[in-house]
Image 1 (tube, rainbow, N blue to C red):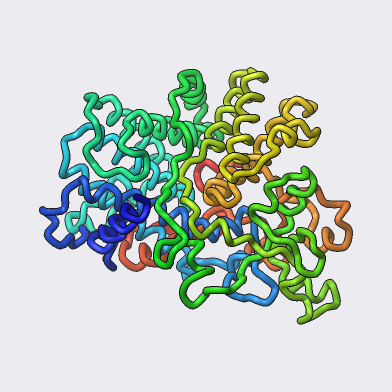
Image 2 (image 1 turned 180 degrees about the horizontal axis):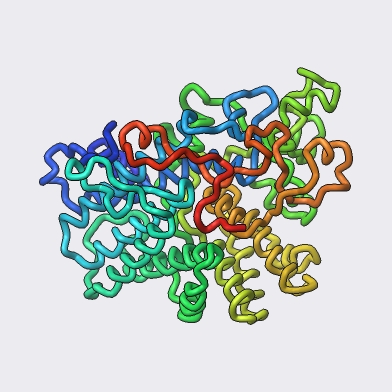
Length: 499
């Protein structure tokens, strides 16, 4: 069934995603004959492709899971944060979300009166706009997707988009009439209850960002969602891939197919390796391989591949054997995770700890989050891991320490699951925190460093240093829409990132 769904989605993408101005209606061949039932999987596929391919890669750098291999050069700009509009970092994602996913949502909404189908389409619409805001903040919303009627839509503030799609979700759910879904749905198997649970999880994710962005009125909404407990079971994952040519996970396939087959462009980053080791986390073997030289897990300091050769007096002899390669094997047929059960439980734990002052409920949700991630990777030992002093909820001295542990463990759980959410949550919570020590200082004396802290890249093109807080506007938007806002830098924050 996985292969059938994937082929169907790919065929629909050919119909709906040819090169086009994102502000114009797509030229569907025989569009009147393409029913909502057939279009719906293409929406899911387009969103999954955006978050599971290009975002997965660049957010892996921004979340400091990986860095550029010493002898490779493909991702130097990402490792060193040398990115502007000319880098075209977000062009493909922007097209996937607007010209494909969101345009297909409009198509479905125009072709069905089934309220359950409409609700599910609105959930996906909210998901797509959430990713747009979390990457670039402002984006076309109120005037978007009008085709030739408005080829240059205005750009809305990120807060307007967030609150707007949340209102759309509420309206669509209130309009439900109890119908079964009629569309093909590889994501949640046409379960309206699962779609409601997914919608509630999206609400909770977005509410937490709105709260920390200064909109305190969403706290009671978050508390109400957690109290009701109406969330999805399992994971929300686009699970259509297999280990066969042309059917692999789109990010994983780059290591096994095409011109990059067999290349090793990515090595482990120092922050994630040190935290795995400090907490004796067995999940390290799922995502990383041991260094060939040291037969141990070794992370490279971010943005330091060229620096390391000088610091170690190795010069060009500093090579891939010195650091840990990314374990590419799980990525071949890995689902694209839009929302994991682990993330959901971490969010519930945060609400219980921060807003409800319910330590027992927070601990239960925290434990469930960690166990869910262990289980998703097929790894034993979660109970022992949760009993260890550095990862036990009860062993933490106070609520601040408990929340930091929660955020750190969420960061770990997002690795090889959803790197975009890892980057977003790190920006929202400021955990992992940015080390006050320079990369060179950490290299010279590792005792000044706290395991897991982010590291200012050794070569950093952000003026004044720091980490990526957003991506630049896509150059295609600048090219085709005169209403695209003034240029933004990587150091400019999205609306909810106020810390």
